[in-house]
Image 1 (cartoon, one colour):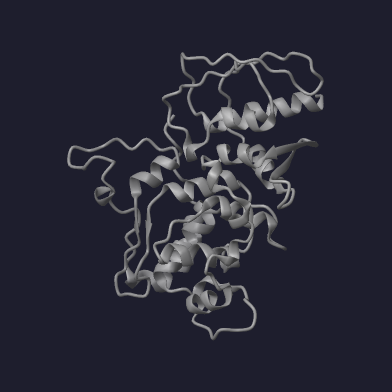
Image 2 (cartoon, helix red, strand yellow):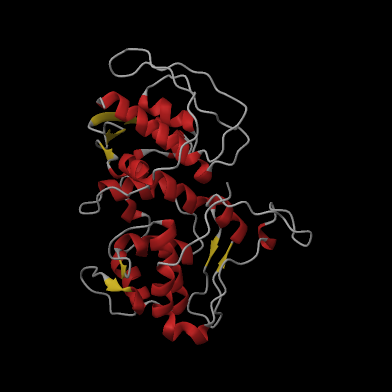
Length: 313
């Protein structure tokens, strides 16, 4: 298969991964690809369908500089290709205000404005002057790391095991490394990025997910953030409340309906539930009993391989 068709396959699969169901409504646009030959495709998109993480297809196509006719049947999602797009996403430099990524060997240059559209974040909020250094938002990594690890403040931050966190934050860290910012390495270790997120969450501060993505890409040794645009938008769209993390209260309050909806689940309202727009009545996702904290490591490991119900089709 030629490179340009492989890239089209990526776009097709990417679209399919964020649009779960076909619709009778079609969007008709025209595509000219790398070799300038017209290639006509369609995909059936329901404009009223909930699109997880605020993603939409047109921002992606705008970023790639393509115009195309959408007419493809829905196909199973392929997260590997979505990860391929984000794992190769790089900042080209502070002055250029552009990002780049590789899709099957094709180098794609993406302007900051287009990336801001993909992430669902206003371009006015993407000033590189304040997103280029994510560690300088009144944030001291050494102090914050010591606070959460219970160790004295050192001259440099050292990665520490998640078992040093208090029970509530251990549960949050488990959720963070497997759902919010999933990674396939050091999931039982607390990394600098984890400290940054935990620090903001416990302080009740809004997470600037664009600076999170940008900072992860430009920070030495961090590399790019896999699924960056997806998970960071998701992180910003759910309500997290873990204030008073050292208190006796055993519960982490999360907006259950927001989390499940962002994950693509259909959550029908019950007659006893208040409207979704009222965050005070959205309920709890986790209710952790302190009495089970001693065995939580074993429980978490057992749960990690358990099948999880998929999104509604």
